Structure formats: C-alpha cells, structure tokens
Image (cartoon, rainbow, N blue to C red; front, side, top):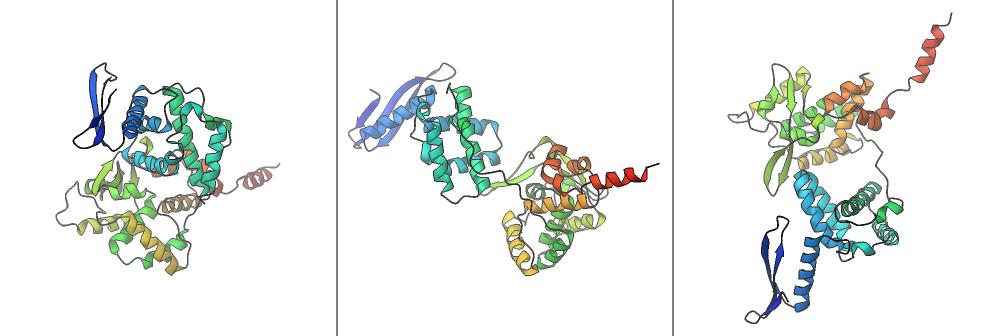
Length: 349
C-alpha cells in the first residue's frame, strides 16, 4: 500500500511509483495529510489523472484539460477560461465521475447557474466551456458521449452593440483632463485598435513620416509584470494609417517620455482601469450612455460605415475578417434595396 504514516510528524503521506508517458519509471511522494483517508483520496485522484479513463472524476479530467490549455492557448485566454471554470463549473462537478454524468445532471447545473443572476452572455460562455471539457474527454479519454449535446444550451450570445456617435465622443472628450489619456482615447476612436493593442504600442511601431502605427502585439499585465504577446489573430497584425492630427497627438505623447527607446511603450502611463474610470465619470458628466472600452472600437466601425466604407476595407483596418464585420455590424449598413429599386426605375425606357 503506497499510503504510510509518519509517526514523527503524526501525519500520513503517499509514496508510489508510476510509468510516465515516455515509459520512464518515476516516484511520486506527497506529505502532510492529517487523515489516512485524505492520503488515499489524493492517491486515487493522482492515479485517475494519470490513467485518464471515463470513470475518473471531473476534477481529474479538469487537471488534464488545464494542462492542455497551458500548452496550446495564449496565457491571457487560459487565465480567463480557468477563472470562469473554477468559479462556475468545478465546484459543482469536481467529485462526479464522468461516466455517471447525465443530461439531467447538466440540466440541474444549468438551473443552479440561472438562479445566480448571471448575465445571459456569461451563462452561454460557461455552458460552452463545460461542453468543451466534455468534448475533450470524448476525444482523448474515451468518454462515449457529451451529456451537454442532448440538451439546449443556456443563456444567449450577446448581440447588443453599444457605441458612441461622433457627436457623443466629442461631448465626452473634454471631460478627460489628462493629455495622455486624451491621446489614448483619440487613438482608440480614430484608429479602431483594441485596448490591448493600444497599450502594446512601442515607439518603434510609430512612423510619423508615413503617418502609421504597426500593430504586432497585445499587452497584458500578470503578477505585476508587463507582457506583450502575439496579437489576437493573424489578421490582427497590420499597419493602420492615421489622420495627421492623430499623428501629432501620438508624437506629443512620445515627446513626454524621457530619452525614449524604440522598445518603450508609448502609452506606458495608461491602464485599462484608468480608461474605464474616465469613461464612467466622463459619460456621466457629458450626459451620454456609458460604454465599455471595447465599444470604442465599435464606435470607430460605426463611423466608417456612416462614411460609406465597405466591409473589406474596414476589416483590414481593424484586423478582423469580412465575415465578422458583416455578422457583427451588418445591421448598421443602410438598406440598399430601396436605392436599388429607385435606380432600376430610372433605367425604365
């Protein structure tokens, strides 16, 4: 038996040998259990995770899934997903055996989640994550079927689109007193870049002569450390042309940096928290609706649509796909059917 008592410390420990995925024989030891059953439970959980069979617990599966996430997803994506799973999924399922979970169990979990007062979009996201974990088990650990596939997903995909018109943005901007924050908001509104892309901009990414900024990274702050990682998608890597007044604004921000280095971030004193606070307080002062930072990107797209630009050009500018532009913003385009009929009428002989 790999569970032993430490008579000196009056605790229990686990000592066992196993064969890893390379075929190497290894030893595993875990100390500090107050009770023998706690040590046995840890041993069982470790072996289940190691073997990866359909009768393992959901908690054991989650450890395998989390390791896969760490290897194949961006750190920011992994952290966000893990946070949702550990808050809304793991507490309910961790001790359940996979092959005993039924669609009725999933339905009970959905009911519990819906009673928490979460946003419909959050409910849908959490539901998707649970289904993804079960699909992971089906694909790699021989779970016969995904119990989520038998029932309707809860929540709904957020479809509402909030943005500021040009007039509303002009009302908001004077409420921002910090000139660097002002430049940040102007850059977001008139370039359509994402907040993470703005904060990742380095001096070398700005070409004043050409009037462009190059987007090739996104900014995150983890454990008090600044990180610039690969952008969200391949389309996100792009060069954005700026109006001359915005070139001047960005140049003025760089001029405030002491002995700027090409690797220095341009908006190094700006944070997402400062931007959110400025929006919240400024919108109230200006008497306009409060929006999210990301909604300023929507505002830029709305502005371009009203100026008559087509989806392909807009998609290239904001680093998205034409399909996404049509899906998210298609309803903002004016209905052309009436215009088409009128032109055909003029062609009548």
